[in-house]
Amino acid sequence: MVEYLILFAKAVFILLIALVIMPVLIYVERKGSSFIQDRTGPNRAAIGPFRLAGLVHVLADVTKLLTKEMMIPPHVNRVYFIVAPFIGFTVIVGAFAVIPWADTFHVAGREIPMLVADLNGGILYILAITSLHVYGMVFAGWASNNKFALMGGLRSSAQMISYELPLGLAMVGIFMVFQSVHLNTIVQGQGELLWGWLPRWGVVVQPLGFILFTIAAFAEANRTPFDLPEGESEIVAGYHVEYSGIRFAMFYMGEYVAIVLSSCMITTLFFGGWQVPWLTTQQLVDNADLLLKIMLGAGGLGALTFAVWMFIYGQRIKGNFGGSIKEKEGDVLGVINLVVAAVMFAAFFRTFGLDLPEWGARTVTLVVQITMFVLKVCFWCWVFIWVRWSLPRFRYDQLMSLGWKKMIPLSFVNIVLTALVILLIDRAGG
Amino acid sequence: MTAVLFYFFAGVAVIGALAMVSLRNPLSGAFALVGTMVSLAALFAMLNAEFVFILQILVYAGAIMVLVIFTIMLLNLDKQELKEVPVSRMRLLGMGAVCALLAVGFIRVFSHFGSEPPAFIDAEFGSIEGVGRMMLGPYLYPFEVISLVLLVAIVGVVLLAKRVV
Image (cartoon, rainbow over all chains, first blue to last red; front, side, top):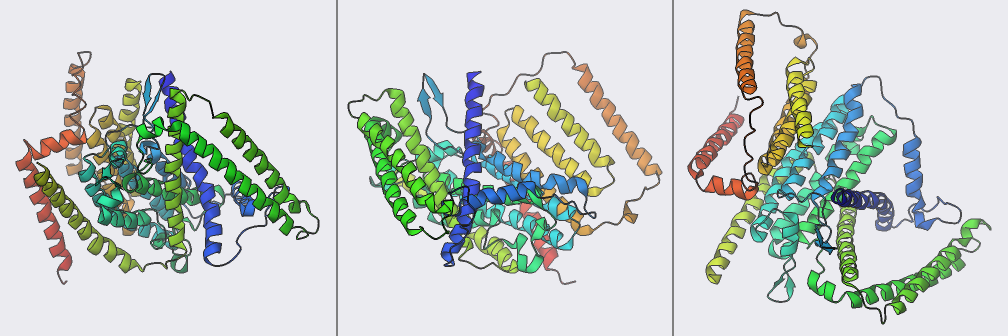
């Protein structure tokens, strides 16, 4: 019974990571694009005094999409038209099951691996599941019975099949170096140090593999510069042109969950996953007391700085809204942050003279590793957005020639080189 | 639990296969086949054949069936071409052959009914390491021959594609 509860909690947790980052990503996409294009971006929607620098717009967007009428045009194939958005979204969410977000957690005599499905197949499972993702787009394109939608569906399936190969081949180097396809083993292998000072991250031992994998991951997620399936200047909006309301939102959310998944994979394979650089799990557990102090102290200082900033901001927006309640936002947020800072400082001083029990130290380690993992994933999500607003789109023949003529040969070269180096090191060592 | 899952996936596989041959719409048929492939993969997973499970989804459901659907969508079949074909003698012969095969299968299945189920192979057998050792160990020669056959196919395709018509 407890086993099932733990499994359930873990499944909910990884879903929460995926589904909470998603709306934040939509916000960051809008705000980040405005930052790159030197605009202000969304900042109007408000709940009471809170505008939260445009974060309320996400709620407004979601409300709009949920309450909008779902149109089913008369010329579509109804069954496939309705099923298609769900295939794409469900499949991507299912792939999160094998991603580890922290080291094995020891509590009350149990060893709980911090991933939902501890499959031996590991990363191959992600490849297999995401290969089903293309059905959503193909069926949407075909069922819409619209030539632009069909073009979009065809483009997406051609693109995803082409780039699945370099994606898989780029990972082979990683499997050879870490001698496993099991994600947690790969992450544990990345905790070691090269020459005593350099973390043995995937990007250090497999630089070419990393570049190939990242490019292929961009193509798999259908993101710029590979967003030809929905190239709006050529085929309106591609496979989801006939969709509206929450069905359209399913495609939209699927795209962002795919970004989170790609970021998780890049982080796990090439950037050490949950590993804190230079600190092993054992070191983290041993120094949990100090870590807790640092976290609480830094958190308190951060909240205090934020509170001061909010008070200054509150002064600045005085009179901007003609005496409306929105002018109070800075003051309200400042007070809230002062309270948070006070609680954190109180906890900080409370930790002195407190003997941290074993499970406490383990929990602190868990929190630190999860934070590390989420931070790395967020960074990569930001790179996805950064690239989208910096690079133009490929032409279709360029896309195909890059995938088949450049990336696949390069990934073979990477495999052969890796094998040679591993062989030479083995010879030298043995 | 295992029995329930087995009957569920086995049922989906059989229904999908039947739907594949009986549905008029070619795309629906292809989609039914995808369902069969995925349920077969689930059955493999329950038999500790983890690697075959992953490859079944990756290769059959993810790549081959996508190509099939791709082709169906590009062919743009008319309603005319989908109309009923009169039952010919060859067709009757084929049906007879299928029925005979089915009968043999049923006899074999039911003659084992109620007897002890065969023992599980150990979990190591179907893992990636296990399959890899098999392929590069005792079965190295057949493995290389199959690679050669695939190479011949690739070269043939390139040759056909390059021919000026």
